[in-house]
Image (cartoon, rainbow over all chains, first blue to last red; front, side, top):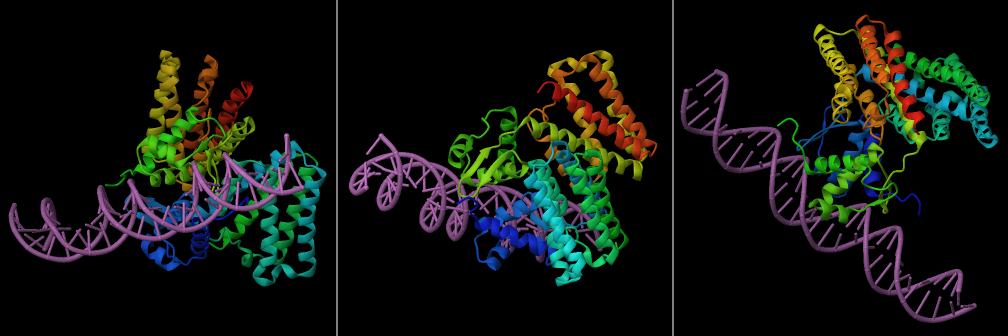
Length: 219
Length: 219
DNA sequence: GGTGGCGGTATTGTATACATCTTTTCGGGG
DNA sequence: CCCCGAAAAGATGTATACAATACCGCCACC
């Protein structure tokens, strides 16, 4: 098996999701024994999961004192958008510099088509924006994967793993925000395919900056 | 106690240093039992240390198969410079936007003075560049700390935690490279103090790009 | 009344035993 | 000779016991 999963990883995923959903109050202690009883595992996988979440930046750790849910400030959220703009922008530039194979271009166009269809049918506002969220995540994750840099991937993940940002803020979007956002997706792919690193980076930065601005207006 | 240290942390530090020094061949397995016997601790702190190092990106992990020393490509190294340029550049912009207190400005100027003195006395090339390395690290770490963003700090740390990059490449520097590099330090601080985010970011990006170019010429 | 030391309790850190999975080895069959 | 499969060996994953540290309340003392 290539990607077997251990209990530590399952526990980490469960807790990560619950933290991002806001099930734990910021500053609350994450105690090993209590969590172990609640999730019906021993302290060992709990410990490993907590350590992972702390490395992700979701928990604060102090030796011999355990873990607490980290408090995110508005500033943290806004900075994360600027970090993403810089990192995903860099990813696009690298991608444009190296060029894409036909298969890779196909892959991106499939995502664009999917977004076009969602927009045309008006489905993007349904299912609690679930389909749109999936498409959007797919777009950004695929680009990161193609950029093929462990460092970039990790950083983008770090910048996405916080409340609000992780879930997307589509409930704050106006109809024209969806349209404009997806137009930018098109511009980004076009620029990459044309090997224009400058424009690819610029459009991705603009794209994420716009998303950050929408969030900023509501915080 | 505020910053007590556990065995897991000590072990992680020891192993990190040894990996960065190249004591372990890339791709080599890091087996818990062997390391436990070598470092005279049980498997528990070893496991936690290995998990930390994997999160740092120094080890690859596969469930039920353990950890291996990650192989870094030239491309990884070069990308890390571009990541640093973007991230530390962003940090400088944020710093310029918010402005520095007198005490903070003092702190930066002290580092600049230290660098000036090293250059004037010619000591920067002594002790295996140790003093210069310390000054340089001090400069970059202090700026990151002042930027006061956990995310930025973590990312910059990630981008620094690889072979070559972590240690610095000063043995490849020409005399004028040291001078020019430190001049850039001055320009960066000046721009930040003048609240000129644009220039502060530009100079930091240029500064790190130059360092990356020197490394690139030798790889 | 405030402060500082002293236990008791709770929680985390570490060691170790056991369970599970992977890898290797070895023998039989084709 | 190669291939396949089962058993054994070795490594990782998990549970649990014990050790060390931090937290809390109490009391003496200033």
